[in-house]
Image (cartoon, rainbow, N blue to C red; front, side, top):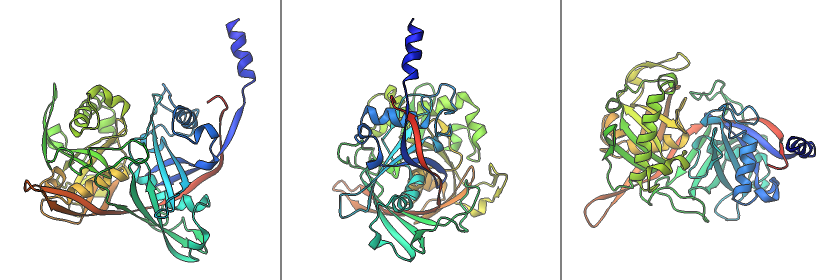
Length: 415
C-alpha cells in the first residue's frame, strides 16, 4: 500500500528547467546561474537554495560519482556560482560561490574559488550583466567583481574581440588540456576577511590569524608541526613536506589512494581550523570542508607531472601540494595559489623558507600538473608592540575560461 502511494506520488512529479551555463574556468568547472533566473524560493540564501543546488550537482551521492547530476565527482568539478548585477557603483557584478559536497547534503559557502573567479567577468558579459557602453570593440575589459562570500574585490581583464568575449587563444595553463585566451585575474587586498551582508566570513580579520608567521601545531596522536596559518585568498595552513614524511613531488595517486594519509591530513586540518579560530571544536570541521585548505611544501626538486611532463628544479622556486575537500588537488586551487604567493612574499613563513627566504614579489611553484607563477606584493605597518601587521596589496595570476554548454538544467520540482 505504501509502495503504491509512493509510485502514485512520483508519477505526478515533474521536472522544472532553469537557465544555466556550464563553464570551465582555470582548472575547475562549475554550473553558473543568473540570480534573477533562479526559482523564486532559491533566490534567497537558505535550505531551499542549498537543496536545489545539491540536486543540480547530484549530491549527496553515496557512490561518490554524481551520476545523476552535473558534478564531476571531484572537488574541482562540484561547484556552483550565482551572479547578479551589482547594486553598488563600485562593482559591475556580485559573485557568490558554493562548494558542493559530493557525499553529504552540504553546500559550503565559507570561501571563494579562485579558478572560477577567472570566468566571472566573461560570464557576466555573456549573461548581459555588464552595461553595453562599457564593452570595447577590441581590447580588454576590466570587470570589477564583488566576491560576496568574503566581501573582497576581484578584477578580471577579459579579452574582447568585435565586442564579444574572446575565449580561444594560445595561452596554455598547466592542468588544462587545450589552450585558450589569457585572462589576468587581480585579487585586491586578498588578505583578511570581513563579513558581507550576513554571509559567512573567514578568519579573525588578520592575514596571520595567530599573530605569528610560524606556529607550532600539536595534533594528538600524530605529532607537532611547524605551521604557517594565513588568511589570504582563502584560509590556508602550510606544513613542511618532510615533517609529514613526503618529498613534495607527490601526485594524486600517492595521496588519494592512501586512506590513512587522507585521515591524517583531515585530522591535522581540523586542529588547524581551531587554531585559526574558524571553528571552536575539531568536530565542527565536518561542516566546514572547503576551508581551511591544508598544503605541504618543499624546496625545488625535479619531478614528472601527472601528464608525464618534466619539471626541472631550476625552473621553480618551491614545491606545493594542496588538498581540497579531503583529496589532493590535481593542480592548484586559485585561492590557494593566492595564499602561496602571499606566504612566499613574507619573510620567515614556511613557504618563504622553502622558496629560499628573503623578500620577493612573485613565486613560481610546482604542483602535480605543472607550474604556476603568482605575483603578490606584501607590505606591513608596525604595531605598538613592535610586531608587523602584514597585508597583501594585490595578488595576480593568469587563467583562462571557456563556456562548455549553455541552456537549461533540469531538476525535479520537489528538489
